[in-house]
Image (cartoon, rainbow, N blue to C red; front, side, top):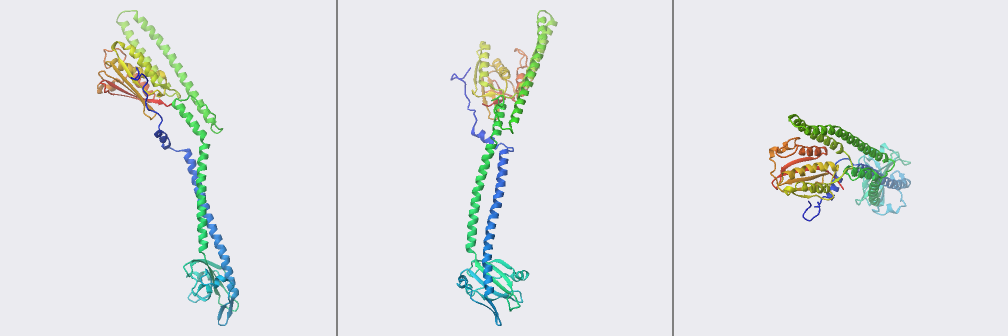
Length: 481
């Protein structure tokens, strides 16, 4: 029986954004993320080293150019210096910057004192009476590197940064060496270096972002065949496909072929098991049927005992053969059975069977909801539950099915009968147990449902229905669309 609207009740279960987000956030190692992070880490390290090397090289080349200028100034001072009985005099150097006060280019000439300091003997007019800064360690450094140029940074007369070069030299006519120093304002040089560094790091940042995006696209495009294979295998597992049908690059095509061979082998194994089970069923059922027929033609205690035990044996054989078939089919990939079709089929049949008591079966299930398993097993499970509900109900049986979103679906079967006490529910699920000996049956119905459900990795729970009777909660694997 369908719902009041005359059609199948449709659920709202469909893939949602939360499911897609869950797939992205699912824990585990990702090959895509690993490749992207490794490439990004190498890009960052390489660009940092490149930026550091470029800025350092620019600064060093700039300082070398300043060193050439300062050495030329020292050479000019040496050429202009004259040793006299009264000391050392320096003629005017033809460099306008050294003549203009506080121009940013300076020179000074001095000598080392006994206490290890530098005493200035002459200075450029550009110093305007000020002295170049002399570090305390400079005299020792000059003595250790006689004739060589020592460079250092200092602060100039108007608090401007200077690059200073100093050298210890001897002049003709003077035995004691002289300290020759030249300094130049490095404000413009520092500004150029900062500008170069800013431009370099900005360009490298843009380049790095572009490379990371390129790596991401490369990985996504390069691994797209793997994603396609993963999706096909997922479709097979969910029952949406039976085989892998697409072709893939040479590196992963053998994997796709091996998966197909595995699926074929699995199917062949299941078919062989089905054949064996069928042969066994035929071999056992035929003698049992003969025994029942023979016992039925005779009267007496012994024929009745044989008939009764043979019926029990036949029921047991059917139970175990059904369980073996279910165990073989439960692991077959690619199987999908629509729930709505089976419910409709069972409802129509059972309403006719129990027409004498006016049973009405109200069922609801989304059309897209599917069981990941064979139709025969689903008919066995739902048929037993629905028949049991009809048997014990007064008039109404209600069934609702829906997906949980976790690869499972839930089928709830309820009736308006007397129900079942809580302390008897566990016993009702055991094989051969009957709660009421006055009703016909072998006591295997619920136990068959339990065996088949467990074979598929599902679960069955008994509870109280708001209709007054028993509620059976059935969980089974679902096959996605």
